[in-house]
Image 1: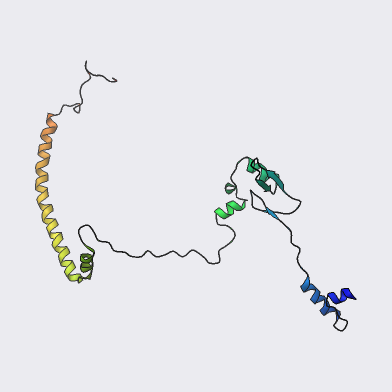
Image 2: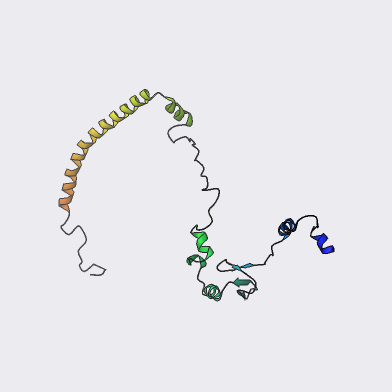
Length: 184
């Protein structure tokens, strides 16, 4: 009678509803599992190997294969079947949040060597027509300067040709004679 009272059973309620009530009370058994130090798989009780290093660090391995690979110093990231490889190559778990939000770079103005910040702001505030007129004037000045330069370029090659005639045919290098102190 005590056992019946503990489960909340009563003779007045039909048997089927009592069974449903019992199903809700059933707890799942918790099993203590370890993680493999190499593959990161779960190791259930009675399985796997334990390795204790000289520094007293304990390593659990799921199989002799994992143990052997660990002792050969083969990195788990290089093997496709390990969790480390899956993590590195972004396989499996998909993040719910999606991609990370990247911040937009904030615009920041600094003074340039020739102009102060106030001068820069004034230039930006100018009407486009005025700015275009100034740019056109600057282009004209550049063209005038480039027209003067070709005349100077024409004179320069003549001087270079004279210098080239004075050089010996061998390229101006000293000839290997008695005084030469190097490999022949």
